[in-house]
Length: 172
Image 1 (cartoon, rainbow, N blue to C red):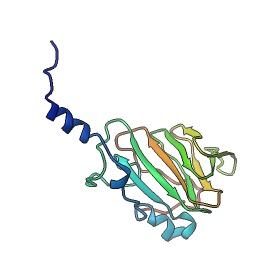
Image 2: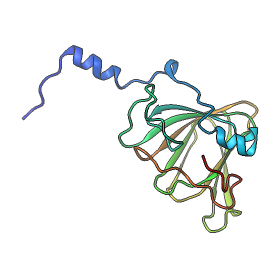
Image 3: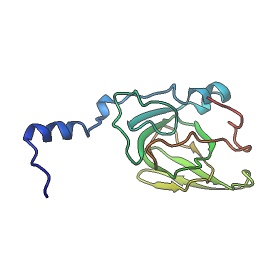
């Protein structure tokens, strides 16, 4: 049996419900503000949500975002010299895709966070970090970095900060 045909009005409504335009996005500097409050301005960064709330907390009531079914998608604005602290997503993989700027991304040894491998990423470079692997990043350029963050679940668990992270012991 085939699905009933949709009217043009139904299709118009459907396509509009699937779009999150740049003009309607909001740079949320408060979501990760607890890290800047604990560690200083070098931890300041903005999340720009498109699909779902990411793993940064409870943003389900943010009417600007599209609902998430299988993954979350946001942009992150990271000022020059700023860092994303070492953290671990235990339940999901995370992808960073660079749109602007230059990042150094590190993966850390699970048992000994002082051991790490670092790579520099620029325009259109991507890294996929598997679940359970600690990761960190830093903006090593002279301008803000802007990059996509894709997390592989409708609602990921909050990440944790291993003992080697500058945010170890910090909570929301």
